[in-house]
Length: 231
Image 1 (spheres, rainbow, N blue to C red):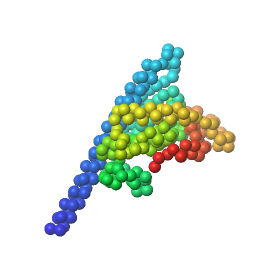
Image 2 (cartoon, helix red, strand yellow):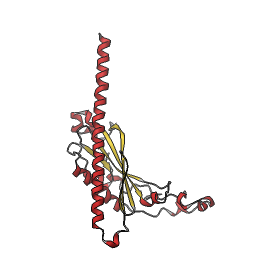
Image 3 (cartoon, rainbow, N blue to C red):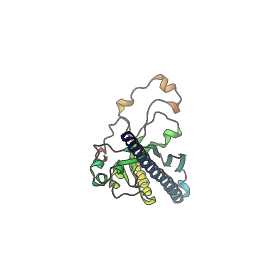
């Protein structure tokens, strides 16, 4: 009888954890769909504001797949990428010390949507060695509450896990602030010593596949706004 009780207890634990992760996944997937929806709207609005002589400035949306979308504006690309797995915050995270999590530890299980910034030319010219940067990641839990870990505009606007609920308005605010951060995140010339040498092979290679990397902070420590990282 004791063995059967242990089996039932084990089954219940596995089942409850599976249900929890399914709920988190569903909310995260719905959030990804909201991001797609607001990105399309923003692109249409941007295009509507262009004057005839500004049409050379591109605003484009690409639906890469069910979990990934691309927003191109001017010389930048933002890629929103949903991870298909469910995560829990580290025990050392400040999130785990909040009353919101203490009241229900299951709230700490989250889906994740990463936001990356690349140069548009990196894709246009197939520069496979160019560098992109993770500028933020959105965590969504079973209650559809969310928390953002990120740079400046992203990390500072939505860091109250207990009160932030993922809605279309919230998704739009996140996208707009990602665009704002990216627009202010300029391409800097790399340190001279990082690029002063080049091989004959690299010069003779097709320019599209050249090994020399390009990135907004390539050669720098990328700690300029690290004080604004959350987590």
